Each structure stands twice: as structure tokens, then as C-alpha cells.
Length: 250
Image (tube, rainbow, N blue to C red; front, side):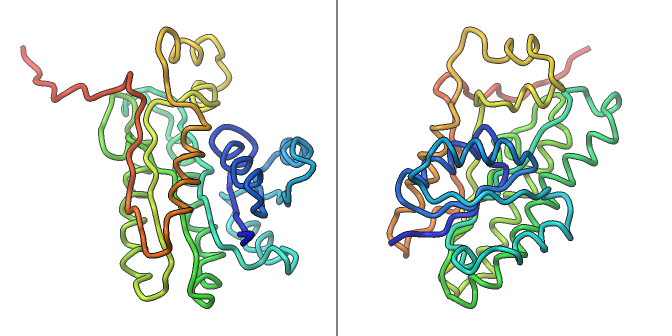
């Protein structure tokens, strides 16, 4: 049966691959993002697929509500929501970090997820079906230098996902927090504000996850039997592992 899948941040990276994976499988995909031309490019890349481009900025509460409310009838009963839109900005330690960057990460990674979830969750509850995927991060579980607010936003997403599960008992709505580790997308390019040399150096001489890996993980979870809920799933490249605790000495 064709499902209606809403993917935020579908203009690149994880979002593009997630939208593509579900569309190729025959599902109807609502692809959202701020860049209209990229959404049109996504739609045109799969001319036989059912992709509905929806331009919206997840950080704007009114814009999200209006965009979701404007969906044609055929796309209103969202079965799967993938809260993918998010970003990291800067890698400075807290005293040197930009407060504006911190606010942007909170607005996108936390408020954006809240706005979109709130816009679709009531319909899922009424229909007694649905699946919400939130894109967290290993940074929400494990700290690293310069990860300050980015990691904190992803820790919020983990706890929000668990609390959603609690609030939604009896509704048949599933919730999964997907926690990717080191992955090659536009993530570092955005974090370093367009510095391609610095972004490329992050992935040099190693093998990170790819966007398609996370898309396949989400698609697999979405196709488990309806009584199966994966609460959270941390996914790393085999080339990434744990650094251990640090003891500072004089």
C-alpha cells in the first residue's frame, strides 16, 4: 500500500536520500525544504515517482502550520514523518562560540522538530497509525570538544522521542530516534560555513557513513511489522569508535 511520507530538509544529504529511497519504493513523498529549485530538482530526478515539493522553513512556526495545512487532500494523511532538517554551526569551544550560531541550532534542531511534529501528530492520532522518525546524532550521547550546543540539541531530540513514545501509547504510532555518527554529507560544509577545504579534510583518508546508509536504515525500520518499535538506533561507520574518558593532569 502506498504510504504518504513527509521528509524535512529534503534538499540535500540525508533528506534527499531518504526521500529518494521511499519514492523509488512507490510511496508518495512530501519533500520539504527552503530551496525551491532543489526540491524541483529532486522531483525531476525521479519523473515516474510521486513527489510533492513543499517549500517551508521549519524554524518559522506560522510557515510550517500554513504549509502543512495547505497540502492537497491526497497528501494530508501523513503516514511517516522524518524530522531530518537540522544543522551544526561552528566547532569553537563554548567561550569562543557564536551565540547566534547557538540560537540557529536551537531554532532548527529543536523548534523545527517541534513545529513539524505538532502539525502532523494530531492527524496520526485520529487515524491511529503513523511513524515518526527523528534524526538525532551520536553527539547527543557522547560529548566532543566544540559540540556544545549541537550535542545538546540532539540530546533533546533523544529525550523528546522517548517522551513521545510514552505520550502516544495506545495510538499505534511508532517513534524512532536515528542517531548517525560520522557521515559524509553537506554537514561539515554547513558547519564550517562554506569552507570546502576544511570540510573535505574531515573525511580525508577514512570511510564515513553515506547518506544512503541512513536512508536504508530508516526504510528498513519503516517496513518492520507494525507491532515492532525501534526506540533508538545509533549507527556509526566501522572507522569510528569511542575515545574514552579524559583525565586532565597538571
